[in-house]
Length: 111
Image 1: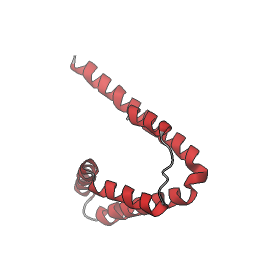
Image 2: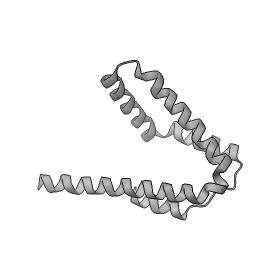
Image 3: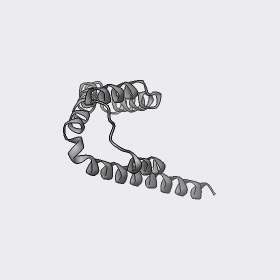
């Protein structure tokens, strides 16, 4: 995650059309085995914890996320690209540091 965070800072805006960017991102997201596994495990856990009534909200949230976020980025991305890049960097960096700290604490407990 930390490496990915610094990769975000080095990245640049794609020169493809917004439609091509959206289709590429959506295809990569839908066919990514790690993402599929994560959603399946999270979905099954939520169903176990909250019951079958959580399914419409869970998948409705996914549909909203995969449509609204890319639409917003495509519409305002050029104006907000620097803010999006910095926010993504900070979130990924903090998450990576959190995972690293948790791993170190876990190893310290084992030893």
